[in-house]
Image (cartoon, rainbow, N blue to C red; front, side):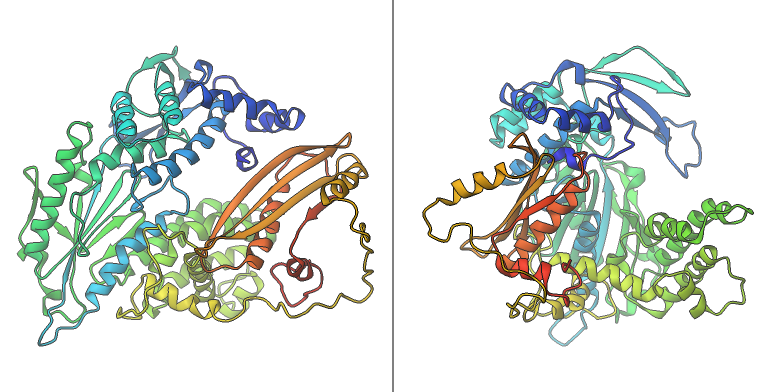
Length: 617
């Protein structure tokens, strides 16, 4: 199944074999790659031909000077054969590490069902809850302090021997430990810069940038530094690969600083033998006070400083965390200004495409807007969009400029006509749609996810961002029946086929084999199924086969966990949808596709339920 998700256009490694070649190779001989990769994992080895990488040095954007080596990012271009195996191992590593305790759910990135938006929400939600508290005679609102770190060097600081020791101590599967050891042994790299390259040189420390397995291995390695001996509800740690965010709640800012210093020193002491430390220039501090606090207008210089390793950290009015600017009141006005500026820059880079006499058509401009401009402008919007008038006004000018670029209409065009003719949604509706789509995902997260289950009752202010707002957006969607399952009659003009086994004398397996022999070559057969465990967990799976010479050849397979809020019916439909989607990315000859489903309600929805606009054919 990993080969189905490979991306076209990816740079090739030293062997010049692309992912397109691998797809054709797998189609011609579908059994060779599984046998090859199974042998590699069985014997715990990574072939030496896949250990040499071409390292391209790429300048980082928006740097003040490029005379500093840190202004460049090295990217390793490895063999596509090796990266395909690494992507398979990476998935197994993340699952095994979480089960063995080698990673923690609060470590986002390189783990299934995790994203940067999850990390932001895990940071923002407790802050929003704290600053919403009101002072009463018996209760004093908590003060929140946020401290962000960046692990210096990250992948380059991983020592293979120490990594193996950590995996053994965590009792991870032996075959994965042996394969990782082989992967990190005798690695070679060829540096290239300004169209020049050198001979391959060996290196003994670090993980290759651009490798699918490197983020998963770094999470295991860094967890030995970031794990805490004591857990507290007032102290939240969240990391996204090498970015660490620490939230501390306390009655006073002074006490919060002391606790943050202790937590940081604990991490640094654990990182000594690992060779890991925090980069002081990238450390930022933010104080978030209750909305009704009289100290909100107090100067930041009057607060006591925070000191880490003789470095004084001064608080700021806003900090940047995973591309989002968080301010002390969670108003996100500064971030909206920066987001509008990003949108203008993206629009400026594409502006020339619509200014010439032979410009691109409007539908191409609309496609570029939806895939390049708006994702840049509205990055992580579920974590900061609240629909307030000030944020809306800040973003609207850029949004209207994008619509004007699509249509080519003059400046005096009415905004309603402009948005309609550009075929864009109103900005508020589009941002609400992004939030709602993300909120629906929250109801299907696994139980061990760091965001936790939906809160029963939230005391957070409704105008503040966080999980409370997202759950409020989507809670009405999970009440009652999601589908109309009462319709059992067939549609007009549909013939009911007679049973192939009316006397019940032939086994189902024999009937199925006889049916397969009647299929012409190049027929695609898809099998789907859903299941529900006793604990309420629902999942689905699918397998796709290519029929040739009266035999079935496997094209791909997959599975999906839908959480505890779905039903068997939903799992069946989801399996069909995922199987058909994966089929579109295969290189098999196009012919008749047959989907084998054992759920009659799902079949009736697909064929006859015209009110279901998501699944109905």
